[in-house]
Length: 624
Image (cartoon, rainbow, N blue to C red):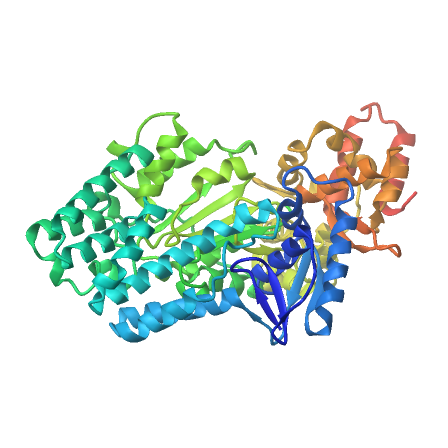
Protein backbone atom coordinates (compact mmCIF):
# COMPACT_ATOMS: atom_id res chain seq x y z
CA UNK A 1 0.00 0.00 0.00
CA UNK A 2 1.18 3.54 -0.80
CA UNK A 3 0.12 6.81 0.83
CA UNK A 4 0.56 10.21 -0.80
CA UNK A 5 0.32 13.68 0.75
CA UNK A 6 2.67 15.67 -1.52
CA UNK A 7 -0.30 16.74 -3.61
CA UNK A 8 -3.86 15.47 -3.15
CA UNK A 9 -4.12 12.98 -0.26
CA UNK A 10 -4.31 9.51 -1.83
CA UNK A 11 -4.12 5.83 -1.00
CA UNK A 12 -2.92 3.35 -3.64
CA UNK A 13 -3.14 -0.42 -3.41
CA UNK A 14 -1.36 -2.54 -6.04
CA UNK A 15 -0.84 0.58 -8.15
CA UNK A 16 -4.54 1.50 -8.18
CA UNK A 17 -6.07 4.44 -6.39
CA UNK A 18 -8.34 3.49 -3.49
CA UNK A 19 -11.63 5.31 -3.91
CA UNK A 20 -12.91 7.36 -1.00
CA UNK A 21 -14.20 10.90 -0.86
CA UNK A 22 -14.68 13.80 1.51
CA UNK A 23 -12.27 16.53 2.56
CA UNK A 24 -12.66 15.65 6.23
CA UNK A 25 -11.84 11.96 5.74
CA UNK A 26 -8.74 12.92 3.74
CA UNK A 27 -7.83 15.34 6.54
CA UNK A 28 -8.01 12.69 9.27
CA UNK A 29 -5.89 10.31 7.18
CA UNK A 30 -3.28 13.00 6.43
CA UNK A 31 -3.08 14.06 10.09
CA UNK A 32 -2.45 10.48 11.21
CA UNK A 33 0.17 9.96 8.49
CA UNK A 34 2.00 13.18 9.38
CA UNK A 35 2.19 12.09 13.03
CA UNK A 36 4.36 9.10 12.01
CA UNK A 37 2.71 6.61 14.35
CA UNK A 38 2.57 9.07 17.25
CA UNK A 39 -0.66 10.13 18.94
CA UNK A 40 -2.77 12.84 17.30
CA UNK A 41 -4.98 14.35 19.99
CA UNK A 42 -8.71 14.77 19.55
CA UNK A 43 -8.15 18.50 20.02
CA UNK A 44 -5.72 18.69 17.09
CA UNK A 45 -7.98 16.61 14.83
CA UNK A 46 -10.86 18.88 15.75
CA UNK A 47 -8.89 22.01 14.83
CA UNK A 48 -7.74 20.50 11.53
CA UNK A 49 -11.30 19.49 10.63
CA UNK A 50 -13.40 22.45 11.80
CA UNK A 51 -11.01 25.22 12.82
CA UNK A 52 -12.22 27.19 15.83
CA UNK A 53 -15.93 26.49 15.29
CA UNK A 54 -16.41 22.74 15.88
CA UNK A 55 -19.88 21.18 15.95
CA UNK A 56 -21.45 19.92 19.15
CA UNK A 57 -21.07 16.31 17.98
CA UNK A 58 -17.29 16.44 17.60
CA UNK A 59 -16.54 13.18 19.43
CA UNK A 60 -19.16 11.19 17.53
CA UNK A 61 -18.00 12.50 14.15
CA UNK A 62 -14.35 11.74 14.94
CA UNK A 63 -15.34 8.21 15.89
CA UNK A 64 -17.22 7.87 12.58
CA UNK A 65 -14.26 9.08 10.48
CA UNK A 66 -11.88 6.70 12.26
CA UNK A 67 -14.29 3.79 11.74
CA UNK A 68 -14.58 4.58 8.02
CA UNK A 69 -10.80 4.76 7.63
CA UNK A 70 -10.36 1.42 9.36
CA UNK A 71 -12.84 -0.14 6.94
CA UNK A 72 -11.23 1.45 3.85
CA UNK A 73 -7.62 0.65 4.78
CA UNK A 74 -8.23 -2.88 6.01
CA UNK A 75 -6.05 -5.05 8.22
CA UNK A 76 -2.77 -3.75 6.76
CA UNK A 77 -3.16 -0.55 8.75
CA UNK A 78 -3.90 -0.35 12.49
CA UNK A 79 -5.55 2.75 13.99
CA UNK A 80 -5.52 2.60 17.79
CA UNK A 81 -7.33 4.73 20.32
CA UNK A 82 -4.63 6.13 22.63
CA UNK A 83 -5.92 8.90 24.89
CA UNK A 84 -5.93 11.79 24.28
CA UNK A 85 -6.30 10.81 20.61
CA UNK A 86 -5.49 8.23 17.93
CA UNK A 87 -2.32 6.72 16.46
CA UNK A 88 -1.92 4.86 13.15
CA UNK A 89 0.61 2.17 12.26
CA UNK A 90 1.02 1.58 8.51
CA UNK A 91 3.14 -1.55 8.64
CA UNK A 92 5.04 -2.08 5.37
CA UNK A 93 3.20 0.66 3.49
CA UNK A 94 5.11 3.64 2.09
CA UNK A 95 4.49 7.38 2.38
CA UNK A 96 5.73 9.74 -0.35
CA UNK A 97 6.69 12.34 2.27
CA UNK A 98 9.00 9.88 4.04
CA UNK A 99 10.63 8.95 0.73
CA UNK A 100 11.03 12.61 -0.19
CA UNK A 101 12.70 13.43 3.13
CA UNK A 102 15.06 10.44 2.94
CA UNK A 103 16.17 11.27 -0.60
CA UNK A 104 16.51 14.96 0.23
CA UNK A 105 18.69 14.16 3.26
CA UNK A 106 20.90 11.78 1.26
CA UNK A 107 21.20 14.40 -1.47
CA UNK A 108 22.24 17.09 0.98
CA UNK A 109 24.88 14.78 2.47
CA UNK A 110 26.24 14.08 -1.02
CA UNK A 111 26.31 17.82 -1.66
CA UNK A 112 28.34 18.41 1.51
CA UNK A 113 30.80 15.72 0.34
CA UNK A 114 30.98 17.52 -3.05
CA UNK A 115 29.66 14.46 -4.89
CA UNK A 116 27.63 16.79 -7.10
CA UNK A 117 26.52 14.23 -9.69
CA UNK A 118 25.02 11.90 -7.09
CA UNK A 119 23.58 14.84 -5.15
CA UNK A 120 21.76 16.07 -8.23
CA UNK A 121 20.29 12.62 -8.96
CA UNK A 122 19.07 12.11 -5.39
CA UNK A 123 17.58 15.58 -5.12
CA UNK A 124 15.80 15.25 -8.48
CA UNK A 125 14.36 11.92 -7.30
CA UNK A 126 13.16 13.62 -4.12
CA UNK A 127 11.43 16.42 -6.03
CA UNK A 128 9.81 13.86 -8.36
CA UNK A 129 7.75 12.64 -5.39
CA UNK A 130 5.73 15.84 -5.54
CA UNK A 131 2.39 15.76 -7.35
CA UNK A 132 0.91 19.20 -6.82
CA UNK A 133 -0.20 21.37 -3.92
CA UNK A 134 -0.03 19.45 -0.61
CA UNK A 135 -3.40 18.47 0.88
CA UNK A 136 -5.30 19.82 -2.11
CA UNK A 137 -8.35 17.69 -1.28
CA UNK A 138 -8.27 18.17 2.51
CA UNK A 139 -9.64 20.99 4.66
CA UNK A 140 -8.21 24.48 4.53
CA UNK A 141 -7.30 24.19 8.21
CA UNK A 142 -4.96 21.27 7.53
CA UNK A 143 -3.48 23.02 4.50
CA UNK A 144 -2.86 26.21 6.49
CA UNK A 145 -1.21 24.29 9.33
CA UNK A 146 0.94 21.81 7.41
CA UNK A 147 1.42 22.90 3.78
CA UNK A 148 3.82 25.81 4.54
CA UNK A 149 6.48 23.58 6.09
CA UNK A 150 6.27 21.08 3.21
CA UNK A 151 6.48 23.89 0.68
CA UNK A 152 9.52 25.19 2.54
CA UNK A 153 11.13 21.74 2.47
CA UNK A 154 10.54 21.53 -1.28
CA UNK A 155 12.06 24.99 -1.84
CA UNK A 156 15.15 24.09 0.21
CA UNK A 157 15.56 20.85 -1.76
CA UNK A 158 15.27 22.84 -4.99
CA UNK A 159 18.03 25.17 -3.78
CA UNK A 160 20.29 22.22 -3.04
CA UNK A 161 19.61 20.61 -6.44
CA UNK A 162 20.38 23.90 -8.20
CA UNK A 163 23.60 24.21 -6.18
CA UNK A 164 24.64 20.78 -7.52
CA UNK A 165 23.79 21.81 -11.08
CA UNK A 166 25.81 25.03 -10.74
CA UNK A 167 28.78 23.09 -9.40
CA UNK A 168 28.56 20.85 -12.50
CA UNK A 169 28.63 23.88 -14.83
CA UNK A 170 25.00 23.67 -15.94
CA UNK A 171 24.33 27.39 -15.44
CA UNK A 172 22.99 27.98 -18.93
CA UNK A 173 20.51 25.09 -18.69
CA UNK A 174 18.98 26.28 -15.41
CA UNK A 175 18.86 30.06 -15.96
CA UNK A 176 15.29 29.92 -17.26
CA UNK A 177 14.15 27.72 -14.37
CA UNK A 178 15.82 30.06 -11.86
CA UNK A 179 14.16 33.10 -13.39
CA UNK A 180 10.78 31.51 -12.81
CA UNK A 181 11.72 30.51 -9.24
CA UNK A 182 12.79 34.07 -8.35
CA UNK A 183 9.41 35.29 -9.57
CA UNK A 184 7.68 32.56 -7.50
CA UNK A 185 9.82 33.13 -4.38
CA UNK A 186 10.90 36.79 -4.51
CA UNK A 187 11.97 36.80 -0.84
CA UNK A 188 14.19 33.69 -0.99
CA UNK A 189 17.65 35.20 -1.08
CA UNK A 190 19.50 31.97 -1.89
CA UNK A 191 17.56 31.41 -5.12
CA UNK A 192 18.33 35.01 -6.08
CA UNK A 193 22.02 34.33 -5.35
CA UNK A 194 21.91 31.27 -7.57
CA UNK A 195 20.34 33.17 -10.46
CA UNK A 196 22.96 35.94 -10.06
CA UNK A 197 25.65 33.26 -10.27
CA UNK A 198 24.10 31.65 -13.36
CA UNK A 199 23.74 35.05 -15.09
CA UNK A 200 27.32 36.03 -14.27
CA UNK A 201 28.70 32.76 -15.63
CA UNK A 202 26.67 33.29 -18.78
CA UNK A 203 28.30 36.69 -19.34
CA UNK A 204 25.31 38.71 -18.11
CA UNK A 205 26.89 40.68 -15.26
CA UNK A 206 24.64 43.72 -15.77
CA UNK A 207 21.53 41.55 -15.42
CA UNK A 208 22.98 40.01 -12.24
CA UNK A 209 23.63 43.47 -10.74
CA UNK A 210 20.10 44.57 -11.61
CA UNK A 211 18.74 41.40 -9.99
CA UNK A 212 20.56 42.24 -6.73
CA UNK A 213 19.20 45.79 -6.56
CA UNK A 214 15.71 44.55 -7.36
CA UNK A 215 15.97 42.01 -4.54
CA UNK A 216 17.16 44.66 -2.09
CA UNK A 217 14.14 46.82 -2.96
CA UNK A 218 11.74 43.89 -2.55
CA UNK A 219 13.16 42.99 0.88
CA UNK A 220 12.91 46.60 2.04
CA UNK A 221 9.34 47.02 0.77
CA UNK A 222 7.98 43.68 1.96
CA UNK A 223 9.88 43.06 5.20
CA UNK A 224 11.66 46.30 6.05
CA UNK A 225 15.06 44.54 6.18
CA UNK A 226 18.35 44.73 4.30
CA UNK A 227 19.77 41.82 2.27
CA UNK A 228 21.29 39.04 4.33
CA UNK A 229 24.95 38.10 4.46
CA UNK A 230 24.72 35.46 1.71
CA UNK A 231 23.14 37.85 -0.80
CA UNK A 232 25.60 40.62 0.09
CA UNK A 233 28.54 38.21 -0.25
CA UNK A 234 27.30 37.12 -3.69
CA UNK A 235 27.03 40.77 -4.77
CA UNK A 236 30.56 41.53 -3.51
CA UNK A 237 31.90 38.52 -5.40
CA UNK A 238 30.08 39.74 -8.51
CA UNK A 239 31.70 43.19 -8.24
CA UNK A 240 35.12 41.66 -7.49
CA UNK A 241 34.92 39.40 -10.53
CA UNK A 242 35.25 36.24 -8.43
CA UNK A 243 31.66 34.99 -8.60
CA UNK A 244 32.19 32.92 -11.73
CA UNK A 245 35.01 30.99 -10.01
CA UNK A 246 32.83 29.67 -7.17
CA UNK A 247 31.92 25.97 -7.46
CA UNK A 248 28.34 26.62 -6.29
CA UNK A 249 26.03 29.54 -5.84
CA UNK A 250 27.87 30.37 -2.60
CA UNK A 251 29.93 28.48 -0.03
CA UNK A 252 26.90 28.17 2.24
CA UNK A 253 24.76 26.82 -0.58
CA UNK A 254 27.37 24.23 -1.45
CA UNK A 255 27.44 23.02 2.15
CA UNK A 256 23.68 22.82 2.27
CA UNK A 257 23.36 25.18 5.23
CA UNK A 258 22.54 28.80 5.77
CA UNK A 259 25.38 31.11 6.82
CA UNK A 260 25.62 31.89 10.51
CA UNK A 261 24.87 35.39 11.57
CA UNK A 262 27.86 37.72 11.73
CA UNK A 263 28.83 40.33 14.29
CA UNK A 264 27.55 40.71 17.82
CA UNK A 265 24.29 38.88 17.12
CA UNK A 266 26.27 35.66 16.74
CA UNK A 267 26.72 35.46 20.54
CA UNK A 268 25.88 32.27 22.38
CA UNK A 269 22.96 32.69 24.80
CA UNK A 270 22.65 30.15 27.62
CA UNK A 271 19.27 30.78 29.24
CA UNK A 272 18.26 27.27 30.31
CA UNK A 273 17.25 26.87 33.98
CA UNK A 274 19.38 24.45 36.03
CA UNK A 275 18.76 20.80 35.27
CA UNK A 276 16.80 18.64 37.73
CA UNK A 277 19.51 16.62 39.46
CA UNK A 278 17.20 13.82 40.58
CA UNK A 279 15.09 13.64 37.40
CA UNK A 280 13.29 10.29 37.53
CA UNK A 281 11.33 8.17 35.04
CA UNK A 282 9.86 9.38 31.74
CA UNK A 283 12.54 7.56 29.73
CA UNK A 284 10.30 6.83 26.68
CA UNK A 285 9.06 10.43 26.60
CA UNK A 286 12.56 11.81 27.12
CA UNK A 287 13.93 9.66 24.29
CA UNK A 288 11.16 10.82 21.97
CA UNK A 289 11.75 14.51 22.75
CA UNK A 290 15.52 14.25 22.30
CA UNK A 291 15.20 12.31 19.04
CA UNK A 292 12.80 14.89 17.62
CA UNK A 293 15.06 17.81 18.61
CA UNK A 294 18.36 16.50 17.27
CA UNK A 295 19.30 17.43 13.69
CA UNK A 296 19.09 13.82 12.48
CA UNK A 297 15.67 13.30 14.06
CA UNK A 298 13.75 15.12 11.28
CA UNK A 299 13.68 15.17 7.51
CA UNK A 300 15.59 17.69 5.44
CA UNK A 301 14.23 21.21 5.79
CA UNK A 302 11.58 20.13 8.30
CA UNK A 303 11.26 22.42 11.34
CA UNK A 304 12.15 20.66 14.59
CA UNK A 305 9.25 21.42 16.91
CA UNK A 306 8.14 19.46 19.96
CA UNK A 307 5.09 20.07 22.13
CA UNK A 308 4.88 18.56 25.64
CA UNK A 309 1.33 18.61 27.04
CA UNK A 310 -0.43 17.49 30.19
CA UNK A 311 -2.25 18.70 33.29
CA UNK A 312 -0.61 20.92 35.88
CA UNK A 313 1.92 19.15 38.08
CA UNK A 314 2.85 16.37 35.65
CA UNK A 315 6.43 17.61 35.24
CA UNK A 316 6.28 19.15 31.76
CA UNK A 317 8.87 21.82 32.59
CA UNK A 318 11.19 19.33 34.30
CA UNK A 319 11.08 17.04 31.25
CA UNK A 320 11.63 19.91 28.81
CA UNK A 321 14.57 21.38 30.74
CA UNK A 322 16.16 17.94 31.24
CA UNK A 323 15.80 17.14 27.53
CA UNK A 324 17.22 20.56 26.59
CA UNK A 325 20.32 19.96 28.72
CA UNK A 326 20.77 16.49 27.26
CA UNK A 327 20.59 17.87 23.68
CA UNK A 328 22.68 20.98 24.38
CA UNK A 329 25.66 19.85 22.30
CA UNK A 330 23.55 19.89 19.13
CA UNK A 331 22.93 23.65 19.42
CA UNK A 332 26.27 25.48 19.18
CA UNK A 333 24.55 28.84 18.65
CA UNK A 334 22.97 28.71 22.10
CA UNK A 335 19.80 27.95 24.03
CA UNK A 336 16.93 30.36 24.75
CA UNK A 337 14.34 29.92 27.50
CA UNK A 338 11.19 31.86 28.32
CA UNK A 339 8.45 31.18 30.87
CA UNK A 340 5.30 32.38 29.14
CA UNK A 341 3.32 32.49 32.38
CA UNK A 342 3.74 35.25 34.97
CA UNK A 343 4.08 34.58 38.71
CA UNK A 344 0.35 35.19 39.22
CA UNK A 345 -0.52 32.56 36.60
CA UNK A 346 -1.54 34.99 33.84
CA UNK A 347 -0.03 34.72 30.33
CA UNK A 348 2.89 37.05 29.60
CA UNK A 349 2.47 39.40 26.62
CA UNK A 350 4.51 38.22 23.59
CA UNK A 351 6.15 41.64 23.19
CA UNK A 352 7.65 41.42 26.68
CA UNK A 353 8.98 37.92 26.00
CA UNK A 354 10.39 38.99 22.62
CA UNK A 355 12.35 41.87 24.15
CA UNK A 356 13.93 39.49 26.68
CA UNK A 357 14.90 36.96 24.00
CA UNK A 358 16.26 39.68 21.71
CA UNK A 359 18.52 40.99 24.47
CA UNK A 360 19.98 37.47 24.77
CA UNK A 361 20.43 37.13 21.00
CA UNK A 362 22.34 40.30 20.24
CA UNK A 363 23.37 43.79 21.27
CA UNK A 364 20.86 45.21 23.73
CA UNK A 365 21.22 48.69 22.25
CA UNK A 366 19.50 47.46 19.09
CA UNK A 367 16.41 46.14 20.92
CA UNK A 368 13.66 48.74 20.54
CA UNK A 369 11.72 49.79 23.62
CA UNK A 370 8.39 49.59 21.87
CA UNK A 371 5.01 47.90 21.97
CA UNK A 372 5.12 47.43 18.20
CA UNK A 373 4.95 43.64 18.20
CA UNK A 374 5.40 43.37 14.43
CA UNK A 375 8.71 45.21 14.64
CA UNK A 376 9.92 42.96 17.47
CA UNK A 377 8.88 39.82 15.55
CA UNK A 378 10.80 40.95 12.45
CA UNK A 379 13.97 41.55 14.47
CA UNK A 380 13.56 38.26 16.38
CA UNK A 381 13.18 36.23 13.20
CA UNK A 382 16.11 38.02 11.62
CA UNK A 383 18.34 37.16 14.60
CA UNK A 384 17.24 33.52 14.79
CA UNK A 385 17.42 32.94 11.04
CA UNK A 386 19.94 30.31 10.05
CA UNK A 387 21.20 29.70 13.60
CA UNK A 388 21.37 26.32 15.34
CA UNK A 389 19.43 27.44 18.41
CA UNK A 390 17.27 25.55 20.88
CA UNK A 391 14.30 27.65 21.98
CA UNK A 392 12.34 26.43 25.02
CA UNK A 393 8.95 28.14 25.45
CA UNK A 394 7.47 27.04 28.77
CA UNK A 395 3.81 27.23 29.85
CA UNK A 396 2.33 28.42 26.56
CA UNK A 397 -1.31 29.45 26.89
CA UNK A 398 -2.53 29.68 23.30
CA UNK A 399 -1.95 30.49 19.66
CA UNK A 400 -2.04 34.28 20.02
CA UNK A 401 0.77 34.18 22.58
CA UNK A 402 2.90 31.50 20.93
CA UNK A 403 2.70 32.48 17.25
CA UNK A 404 5.00 35.56 17.43
CA UNK A 405 7.65 33.54 19.31
CA UNK A 406 8.14 30.88 16.62
CA UNK A 407 11.06 31.37 14.19
CA UNK A 408 10.27 31.23 10.47
CA UNK A 409 13.23 29.08 9.36
CA UNK A 410 13.87 25.39 10.08
CA UNK A 411 17.32 25.71 11.70
CA UNK A 412 16.24 26.70 15.24
CA UNK A 413 14.55 23.89 17.16
CA UNK A 414 11.58 24.76 19.37
CA UNK A 415 10.43 22.91 22.49
CA UNK A 416 7.05 24.07 23.85
CA UNK A 417 5.21 23.04 27.00
CA UNK A 418 1.51 23.66 27.55
CA UNK A 419 -1.52 22.16 29.23
CA UNK A 420 -3.30 21.35 25.99
CA UNK A 421 -2.63 20.86 22.27
CA UNK A 422 -1.65 24.05 20.43
CA UNK A 423 -2.53 24.12 16.69
CA UNK A 424 0.00 26.96 16.20
CA UNK A 425 2.85 24.45 16.56
CA UNK A 426 2.26 23.03 13.07
CA UNK A 427 3.87 19.67 12.41
CA UNK A 428 5.06 19.34 15.99
CA UNK A 429 5.85 16.04 17.68
CA UNK A 430 3.31 16.02 20.51
CA UNK A 431 4.31 14.23 23.72
CA UNK A 432 1.29 13.89 26.01
CA UNK A 433 2.37 13.17 29.59
CA UNK A 434 0.31 10.80 31.72
CA UNK A 435 0.54 10.25 35.50
CA UNK A 436 3.54 8.20 36.58
CA UNK A 437 3.25 4.47 37.06
CA UNK A 438 3.51 3.26 40.70
CA UNK A 439 7.10 2.06 40.25
CA UNK A 440 8.29 5.39 38.86
CA UNK A 441 6.25 7.22 41.50
CA UNK A 442 8.02 5.30 44.26
CA UNK A 443 11.39 6.05 42.66
CA UNK A 444 10.59 9.79 42.51
CA UNK A 445 9.42 9.76 46.14
CA UNK A 446 12.66 8.07 47.19
CA UNK A 447 14.74 10.58 45.22
CA UNK A 448 13.02 13.51 46.96
CA UNK A 449 12.73 12.06 50.49
CA UNK A 450 15.91 10.01 50.58
CA UNK A 451 16.10 6.29 49.72
CA UNK A 452 16.70 5.23 53.32
CA UNK A 453 13.58 7.04 54.63
CA UNK A 454 11.37 5.39 52.02
CA UNK A 455 12.97 1.95 52.33
CA UNK A 456 12.40 2.06 56.08
CA UNK A 457 8.64 2.51 55.71
CA UNK A 458 7.54 0.51 52.64
CA UNK A 459 3.83 0.34 53.53
CA UNK A 460 3.62 4.07 54.19
CA UNK A 461 5.49 4.77 50.97
CA UNK A 462 3.03 2.65 48.98
CA UNK A 463 0.11 4.48 50.58
CA UNK A 464 1.66 7.88 49.76
CA UNK A 465 2.18 6.81 46.14
CA UNK A 466 -1.47 5.78 45.92
CA UNK A 467 -2.72 9.06 47.44
CA UNK A 468 -0.56 11.16 45.07
CA UNK A 469 -2.06 9.32 42.06
CA UNK A 470 1.06 9.52 39.90
CA UNK A 471 1.32 13.34 40.03
CA UNK A 472 5.05 14.24 40.15
CA UNK A 473 4.39 17.60 41.87
CA UNK A 474 2.49 15.90 44.69
CA UNK A 475 5.18 13.23 45.09
CA UNK A 476 7.94 15.84 45.19
CA UNK A 477 6.02 17.87 47.79
CA UNK A 478 5.59 14.85 50.06
CA UNK A 479 9.21 13.80 49.54
CA UNK A 480 10.43 17.28 50.41
CA UNK A 481 8.35 17.32 53.60
CA UNK A 482 9.70 13.92 54.66
CA UNK A 483 13.28 15.00 53.98
CA UNK A 484 12.80 18.23 55.98
CA UNK A 485 11.55 16.34 59.06
CA UNK A 486 14.16 13.70 59.99
CA UNK A 487 12.36 12.78 63.21
CA UNK A 488 8.90 12.50 61.63
CA UNK A 489 8.14 9.10 60.10
CA UNK A 490 6.50 8.76 56.67
CA UNK A 491 3.68 6.81 58.38
CA UNK A 492 2.30 9.97 59.98
CA UNK A 493 2.17 11.85 56.68
CA UNK A 494 0.60 8.81 54.96
CA UNK A 495 -2.18 8.82 57.57
CA UNK A 496 -2.83 12.53 57.03
CA UNK A 497 -3.00 12.04 53.25
CA UNK A 498 -5.47 9.19 53.67
CA UNK A 499 -8.28 11.63 54.48
CA UNK A 500 -9.58 12.98 51.14
CA UNK A 501 -11.11 16.01 52.89
CA UNK A 502 -7.69 17.32 53.96
CA UNK A 503 -5.43 15.71 51.34
CA UNK A 504 -4.97 18.82 49.18
CA UNK A 505 -4.04 20.91 52.23
CA UNK A 506 -1.26 18.45 52.98
CA UNK A 507 0.13 18.68 49.43
CA UNK A 508 1.92 21.94 50.10
CA UNK A 509 5.57 22.75 50.77
CA UNK A 510 7.13 26.17 50.35
CA UNK A 511 6.16 27.51 46.93
CA UNK A 512 5.03 24.06 45.75
CA UNK A 513 1.29 23.56 46.08
CA UNK A 514 -1.03 21.28 44.09
CA UNK A 515 -4.11 23.46 44.68
CA UNK A 516 -2.27 26.61 43.53
CA UNK A 517 -0.88 24.86 40.44
CA UNK A 518 -4.39 23.93 39.29
CA UNK A 519 -5.94 27.36 39.86
CA UNK A 520 -4.71 29.03 36.61
CA UNK A 521 -6.30 26.27 34.50
CA UNK A 522 -9.62 26.73 36.33
CA UNK A 523 -9.50 30.54 36.16
CA UNK A 524 -8.89 30.43 32.40
CA UNK A 525 -12.22 28.64 31.83
CA UNK A 526 -15.23 30.55 30.60
CA UNK A 527 -17.59 31.44 33.48
CA UNK A 528 -20.26 28.86 32.62
CA UNK A 529 -17.77 25.98 32.54
CA UNK A 530 -16.08 27.25 35.69
CA UNK A 531 -19.42 27.23 37.50
CA UNK A 532 -20.32 23.60 36.70
CA UNK A 533 -16.84 22.21 37.39
CA UNK A 534 -17.56 21.24 41.06
CA UNK A 535 -20.91 19.71 40.16
CA UNK A 536 -19.25 17.45 37.59
CA UNK A 537 -16.73 16.30 40.19
CA UNK A 538 -19.66 15.21 42.36
CA UNK A 539 -20.45 12.53 39.74
CA UNK A 540 -17.73 10.42 41.35
CA UNK A 541 -14.34 8.90 40.59
CA UNK A 542 -15.46 6.65 37.71
CA UNK A 543 -15.64 7.58 33.98
CA UNK A 544 -18.93 9.13 32.87
CA UNK A 545 -20.43 10.03 29.44
CA UNK A 546 -21.87 13.39 28.38
CA UNK A 547 -25.41 12.07 28.83
CA UNK A 548 -24.81 11.48 32.54
CA UNK A 549 -23.27 14.93 32.92
CA UNK A 550 -26.24 16.48 31.10
CA UNK A 551 -28.65 14.85 33.56
CA UNK A 552 -26.66 16.02 36.58
CA UNK A 553 -26.39 19.59 35.25
CA UNK A 554 -29.95 19.71 33.85
CA UNK A 555 -28.57 20.78 30.45
CA UNK A 556 -28.99 19.54 26.86
CA UNK A 557 -26.48 16.79 26.09
CA UNK A 558 -24.78 18.85 23.36
CA UNK A 559 -24.18 21.71 25.79
CA UNK A 560 -22.88 19.35 28.45
CA UNK A 561 -20.50 17.77 25.92
CA UNK A 562 -19.23 21.22 24.93
CA UNK A 563 -18.42 21.95 28.57
CA UNK A 564 -16.71 18.59 29.03
CA UNK A 565 -14.58 19.19 25.95
CA UNK A 566 -13.63 22.64 27.29
CA UNK A 567 -12.47 21.00 30.53
CA UNK A 568 -10.53 18.38 28.56
CA UNK A 569 -8.90 21.17 26.52
CA UNK A 570 -7.83 22.80 29.80
CA UNK A 571 -6.35 19.48 31.01
CA UNK A 572 -8.81 19.39 33.93
CA UNK A 573 -10.57 16.31 32.58
CA UNK A 574 -9.38 13.24 30.70
CA UNK A 575 -11.08 11.40 27.84
CA UNK A 576 -11.20 7.79 28.99
CA UNK A 577 -12.49 5.32 26.42
CA UNK A 578 -16.09 5.06 25.24
CA UNK A 579 -19.35 3.68 26.58
CA UNK A 580 -21.35 0.82 25.07
CA UNK A 581 -22.81 3.18 22.42
CA UNK A 582 -19.41 4.43 21.35
CA UNK A 583 -19.78 7.82 23.07
CA UNK A 584 -16.63 9.16 24.80
CA UNK A 585 -16.38 8.96 28.56
CA UNK A 586 -14.65 11.48 30.79
CA UNK A 587 -12.62 10.97 33.94
CA UNK A 588 -11.22 13.20 36.68
CA UNK A 589 -7.69 12.73 37.92
CA UNK A 590 -8.21 11.98 41.65
CA UNK A 591 -6.44 15.15 42.81
CA UNK A 592 -8.19 17.33 40.21
CA UNK A 593 -11.50 15.96 41.49
CA UNK A 594 -10.58 16.87 45.07
CA UNK A 595 -9.60 20.32 43.81
CA UNK A 596 -12.98 20.76 42.13
CA UNK A 597 -14.87 19.67 45.22
CA UNK A 598 -12.78 22.02 47.37
CA UNK A 599 -13.99 24.91 45.20
CA UNK A 600 -17.58 23.98 46.03
CA UNK A 601 -16.70 23.72 49.71
CA UNK A 602 -15.04 27.14 49.63
CA UNK A 603 -18.33 28.68 48.48
CA UNK A 604 -20.22 27.11 51.41
CA UNK A 605 -20.92 29.23 54.54
CA UNK A 606 -18.10 29.22 57.11
CA UNK A 607 -20.55 28.69 60.02
CA UNK A 608 -19.76 25.00 60.40
CA UNK A 609 -22.77 23.58 58.59
CA UNK A 610 -22.42 19.93 59.66
CA UNK A 611 -24.94 18.64 57.14
CA UNK A 612 -23.15 20.36 54.24
CA UNK A 613 -19.81 18.92 55.32
CA UNK A 614 -21.29 15.43 55.61
CA UNK A 615 -22.64 15.67 52.04
CA UNK A 616 -19.25 16.91 50.82
CA UNK A 617 -17.46 13.97 52.44
CA UNK A 618 -19.93 11.56 50.85
CA UNK A 619 -19.19 12.96 47.39
CA UNK A 620 -15.47 12.41 47.83
CA UNK A 621 -15.81 8.65 47.83
CA UNK A 622 -19.18 7.77 46.28
CA UNK A 623 -21.17 8.48 43.17
CA UNK A 624 -24.72 9.74 43.72
